[in-house]
Amino acid sequence: MQSYELILDDAGNKIRITSGDIWSYFRELNTVTTLYDKKEFQITGIVGDAILGIPEDSYQKRSIKYGDFLEVWQRWLEIRSNKIGDYQDISRNASYVIAVIETYLKTIQSKYGKD
Image 1 (cartoon, rainbow, N blue to C red):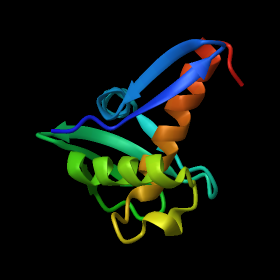
Image 2 (tube, helix red, strand yellow):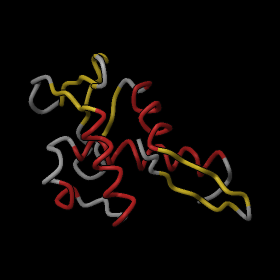
Image 3 (tube, rainbow, N blue to C red):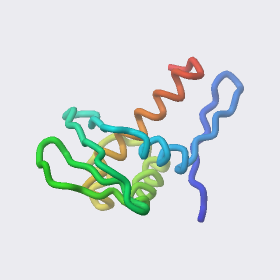
Image 4 (cartoon, rainbow, N blue to C red):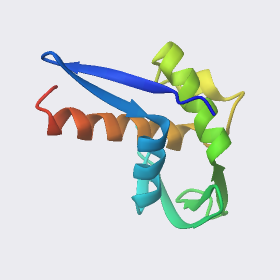
């Protein structure tokens, strides 16, 4: 399996971020809040290669499989867009994946003092 990664350059220090890093971070969260409409996705469990959760606006369980996450991550690496419409052909859960990517990147950047 190919590792899709992002390299952040922090004053000459290379920070390597892989899909596995973000997926692991996602698996540790209790909730995810979307970037634009600020809707929460309550994570209720992990089964196999999927994160299970319930969006606050529907209360219907959803599953975000690693493959769907990976496709959104790959496209995000190509276009660096936070517009959910750019991912609607991949996953109806793209808003949660994009929120996790952005939150993780902000966490890493603040850790290394990069804004």
